[in-house]
Image (cartoon, rainbow, N blue to C red; front, top):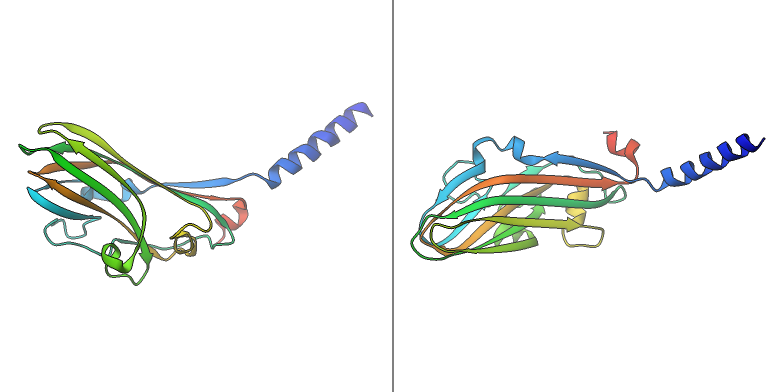
Length: 190
């Protein structure tokens, strides 16, 4: 009898815990970008928009990349975007660099100049010949700007690099998206 009561108590505790279990779907976005993970930016004041669909940083791609297949605002609890890039100052003067992450609706043609929502930013200053890591982490929860777009699932996302210097090279080292929900069964259904 004592074993039965102990087993019943354990099952009740486990059932209570499973109601609060959260599931996270993590996607390594970098693996889908191919050759778009590195490049060189010439000298002067600059604005670079990533991803760059045509491979020419001089012709800006202002619409970011389209993401489809969200969970719905009633299912999604949180979203996290992590971007890490190695930046090397290839010029003869200091490099001042800022990175900003934006999200916009699926029909947005210019995320960066009024058509999108700024999610977060990071900056980096490098002396000539110096390399460093630029890390941008964005965490969204219900009520945050851009959360409803990400939850809906048809949105555009992109990153703007801007600043000044004699030139730099970049290589994306990590780009991950993680979506957290309580209900795994609904996460896996179309």
